[in-house]
Image (cartoon, rainbow, N blue to C red; front, side):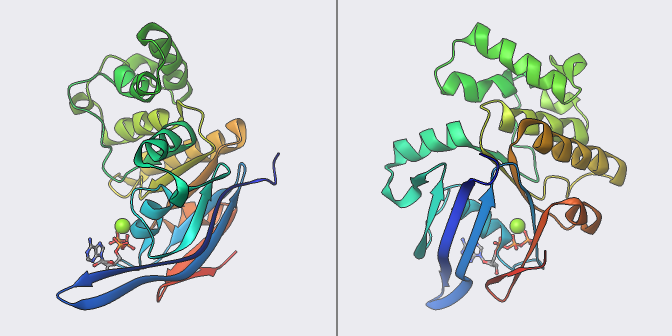
Length: 228
Ligand SMILES: Nc1ncnc2c1ncn2[C@@H]1O[C@H](COP(=O)(O)OP(=O)(O)OP(=O)(O)O)[C@@H](O)[C@H]1O
Ligand SMILES: [Mg+2]
């Protein structure tokens, strides 16, 4: 199971059109993530890191190339099937937490379960277990506005993990945090990866964190270069 690919991208190309001019962002990028692997993606601002993660999550479509997640080719899926695949198999963590302000930490974590059809009492129970794992059980009733930045990101990680996905995609999850909170979140992601066998693909500007990931890629000039 361990060496099985959970995500494969082949020959991905993506351009944006601005004022009749083509901006080529990704050019024939190929990429593979095995079960339980931790992968860092680095690159200067504008190199296409967010674009790549959005394609991998099926949030946007490539101009060319294919993406297979959990054995399914994204281009063959309807919008509903894609939403279902994202719900079941992919977790996403953003730079800004994207938690829903009107819900508590516990409810935010339980939402993907309820969207996936789990009844509320069972969903809350499962959410509680994962909140405990990110050491936030005592903050379960807090709404996002009354959590610290690091706590919000830990809730976002719990939400990304609650469906037991094969892979979590994270776009600068600690870009907004002070060094100490960032390190806490980094430690948490690395220990969750090895404990749960979930793969992490993380875009980061933090070189210390990138060096602790098993593999390191750099986006440069539209190409994905393997650094390690
Ligand atoms: N919707 C869009 N329309 C036109 N151009 C876009 C669009 N989205 C992104 N781009 C351009 O594509 C390039 C890559 O953007 P992207 O957001 O993927 O970069 P990034 O590596 O994530 O940068 P950062 O580190 O600043 O987050 C940039 O030059 C950007 O201006
Ligand atoms: Mg970005």
